[in-house]
Length: 262
Image (cartoon, rainbow, N blue to C red; front, side, top):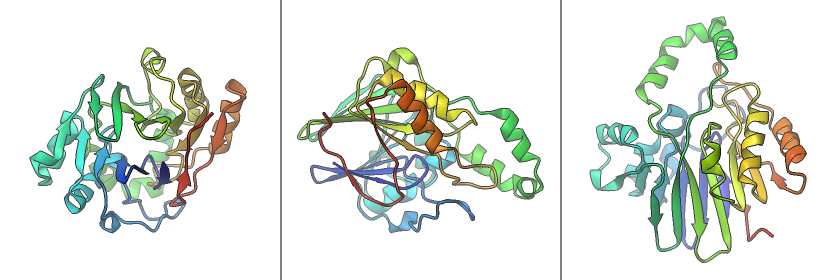
């Protein structure tokens, strides 16, 4: 399996001659760090798109990419309404719910009922009332309201031709009982949403008990409202809870090969 991080919660996953995209958002704001020179119009190959939830930094480019590539979108009912409004063909959209199990030729997918992390509102309010944020408040509010969160999912992938399982969450909220139903080889962990996200998501990782973890969504993708979360702190917290876990730090657009993890 080959894995490429596109920033925020976006991943390209390649295996068995198929391309899976998860939360493929590339329309980063001016000043975003790290800089990622990839645009939605650059994406020409995808077979499936899986969307964890509808917030703009996960979903805003999905319609464009789906229409360019013909990829089928798997998303909530709320998100599907947005894509239909964007004139994505209805046959390219499949509505999913928590608990669904989808069987494909190359993999099996379990849709995990989840929830969004609780935002750190003290931090957000402080950032909103900075002058540079107030100047762009109208456009920021437009992005947040145009793309409602809707239902929130995690995805558990079981690859059929490779001895490998992995799961992806787009936000660090969770139901403990749902996490404890699975034990993935690899966890793509969303380290974002509040100042103590490194500790919150480290605990989430403990409940999943994977062999390897890769943190994502920690980048400063939509300044001035966003900020860089300490991926280093997350990795330290995970190691405290799971000393034997393999921890990898993703580099944007750098392809990683992940084989069976023992």
